[in-house]
Amino acid sequence: MIIKPANRYPADPRAVFILALSVFSGLTALALETAPGSLESVLPSWAVTIWGALLSLGSLLTLAGMARQTANGIITEQVGSVMVGVTTIYYSIIALLIVGTEAVQTVGIVLAWGAACLLRWAQLQVSINQAAAEARHRQIQRGIKRGVQAEIERREGLQ
Figure 1: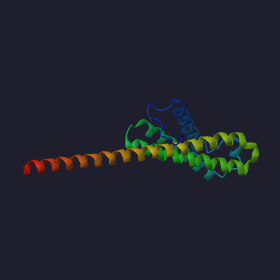
Figure 2: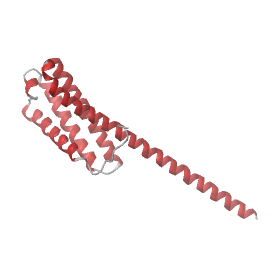
Figure 3: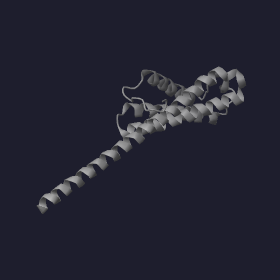
Figure 4: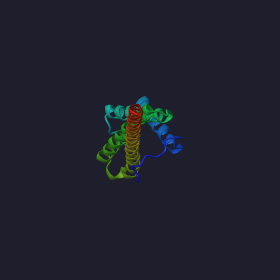
């Protein structure tokens, strides 16, 4: 199943590459105040700034979360994945509205990347939910074991 959590570590080098590329693209948009080619001339500067900031920050958070093998790392990766997903969908919608069907090839790639980021968020959420359920199960088992042990000790005390 596609939502089933994938192993987190080591990080997939393809994901690291595209995230690093996203950081670079977002920083370029911020530093040079330019969007990718076809949109550069038609987007207002605030739209380019939002796109660049969210793409860079989301990608950096995702990379930082991937680098940490902790529960907080998973949550950080989730936050970054959602930011990149929403940012790429934002870019795709703007591109289609402004440029039209001529942007379909680029939009398809960007939209697929955004969908993959949102899917990754879902995978990580399933992983968090599974870990929480396993922790609850272990806690219940410990409680049952303590209860049984207490009952055995009580009965031994009666004899």
